[in-house]
Every structure is written in structure tokens, then in C-alpha cells.
Length: 235
Image (cartoon, rainbow, N blue to C red; front, top):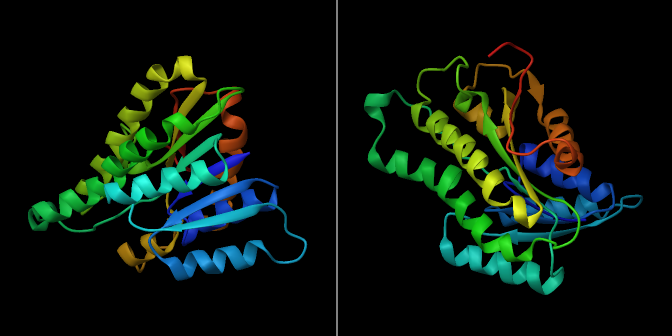
């Protein structure tokens, strides 16, 4: 399969891209940090590993870069089967200290870039078989879950992603594209550690990545338009 994943330079995205490539899939790994993507490519090419990783370095909140992504993928693979919208931005500040720029930056990465990328890649999805879009949200965006101080911009942007998932699942039914959303609990990633330096997350990036990768491959057989909490505690 041809698989696109954003936020692939570290944490969940890095590990998921590596796992999928090792399963024999062709992975288009997208992230801002070129040097981290180059490291990912080298690791994927180690002896005994299968599959191929194509690195695309840039900012997905930049509309011109979305054009580049679509052209690069169309030139190399022509079609895709899975898109994992994993890239995210987290700002941890009390509500009264959040600037309008903070809100715009968070929504630009967590919401608008997801919508933009889906629109650009929609014509590339395979016309045969079942395709899958997996949006990576957070338990902070899951209705009825416990919320945390300082995360109003982040959690609300992830809640928007939940709503978008439900809408697109209905819109894409005739295109054979399932759209699902995984609301992840705490995962020990670079982003999480920077926001909560004294807090130990419930899951490792490798464990979360494997779950997401396996769900991306198989979840469309049983799920569409579903918002799935991935947490070891009750919301």
C-alpha cells in the first residue's frame, strides 16, 4: 500500500512510518524537520527492513507546500490508500494568556492543514478497494473526557477534528474512503514532554504508533465515521 503520514519526524509519526515501511508498504513521511526525516529514511533502509520511505520536508500549514506534496506523490506513486493525519501542535497556557496568534497557530496545524491536505490528496486515492483516512485527535477533544488547564486551544482544535471526521465519513462514502478518528490518551512524545516536563505519560510512542499503524491498515474493514478513545482510563 501507499501510505501518507504527517508529523513523521519524531514520536508517534516517526515510529508509525518506520513500522509501516518494515511491513513492506511505501510510506510518504511528511514533517518540518528535514534532518529527522533523513534519519528516518536511513533507519528504514537498514539491512533486513522492507518497504520504502519517501521524505517530504516542509510546513503543512503552508498551502504551497500542500501542492508540492500532491505533485510529489502523484509523480512517484500515482495513487494512495491511507492517509494518517498525525501532525499536531500543542500550546500549554492559561486561557487568559493565549494570544490570538497562539489560537491561529494551533488551529492552522491541527485543523486547517488537515482539511487542506485531504482536499489536495483526495484525487489520488485508489478507485479500487477500500481506502482509509485516520485523523489523530486527543482525549482532550473527546466529549465528556477530563480536561486539563492550559489546553483550551489544543483540546478544542482536536474536538474540531472529531467533527470533521464524522462529516467526511458521510461525504466520502461513494468514494470508498473510510474516515475514522483516534482520540489518543497521554503518550510520551517530545511534544508531550515539552508541555508537561514533570508528567509521565501512560503509553510509549512506539506502542501508540504500532496501534495507529495497525488500525490504519485494518480499521476501515469494520469502522467508518467512528471516534475511538484510546486510553487506559475512563473518559
